[in-house]
Structure formats: C-alpha cells, structure tokens
Image (cartoon, one colour):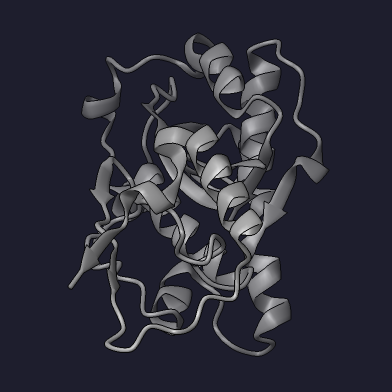
Length: 232
C-alpha cells in the first residue's frame, strides 16, 4: 500500500484571493514505512510575499524569484503522487491550494477523498486536546527540534512519524525488517540470537524441518534466517 505524506507552504490563507504555493514537500510510505523517496520543490508564486507569511516559513521574494512556477513542475508532482492516498495535516487547506494551482496549470483537480486528514484523526482520537503538529510531536515524543520554521519537506517527514503513531504505532512489521529507512538515512540492523544453555526439545518433525529448509533456500538472500548470527 503506497501513501504520500504531503505539506505545502503558501503566501497566505486563500487561493481565491490570489495566494499561491511557494513550497511543496512529500514523503513516500510503502505499507506504512518510509522508503526514502521524496518530492520537494520551491516555487515562484509570481507575486509578492506578505510579511506574515514570510515570518512563518522564512521564504523571501528574493529566494523564490528564480524558482520554477507550479505549472512547470505540475506533471512531475502528479507522477510522484500517482493517485496514491495523500496524508495531510489539515487536508482541506492544502488540497484547496493544490487544486487551485492545478487549475491554473490546466490540470485535473484532485478529488477530496484522495486525502486523509491527520488533524481530523487526532481530534477524533484525542477530543479536546491540542492537535497541532507540534502538540502531537510532544504527545508521541517525536523530536521536532529542527522545526524552527515551517518547511514543507521537514514537516512532511515529521508528519509521517505522527501519522504512524496515530494509526497504531511505528512497528507495523513487528520489527522483522532487516533495515529501516528514515528520510535519506538507512540503518542496517544486525540481529542476534542467543543460544539457550539448555536447548528446548524440538517440536518439529523431520519432514517439517526439511520442508522449512527447502522453503528458506527458495527465498535466498531475502530470508531473515540466513542473516541471523548465533552468539554462543
């Protein structure tokens, strides 16, 4: 199952009044695990940058003036999301901006049900409690110390962690994966099995052991049994 965690930064609150997207960031999840694949673009909004918006994300007119306009990256963006569910905090805000930009680029709008709103999930799960991204990071003990300003890609990476906690924790594979991806970093895990001083009596029949050995051989390098290190 492929999902895309997404965030945008804008010049203001309403695309109808002329506000535009200035940054878009997205992180790919596969079966609720980050793959390390991301999409990130700064965009020229073709308008001025209000001081209030600049105070939120720190992006200036000078910095954005040589960046591409949305229409130039629209096809790349649509190719990246590729119809996958979009995980967004306060989804209605980002979706209205994305659809406004797609309309200006003569592209088809995205359906509302394509988005999963983590803000709505948080409010339902913790009624009456703060549900901002920062508040959820505190609740789930997620490090967001690098978030001094809003940034689309960083916020997407943080939201991915929050989303996994909201749907039941960050161990959907029960810890059996031989590697874990976090953003662009990949950590290999060396698993060790400690041998009992007094081994338990085998419960498998000879036929079952032979069938298991044959199955593991078919898996080759994919088999986790081939990666175990017996510590004596």
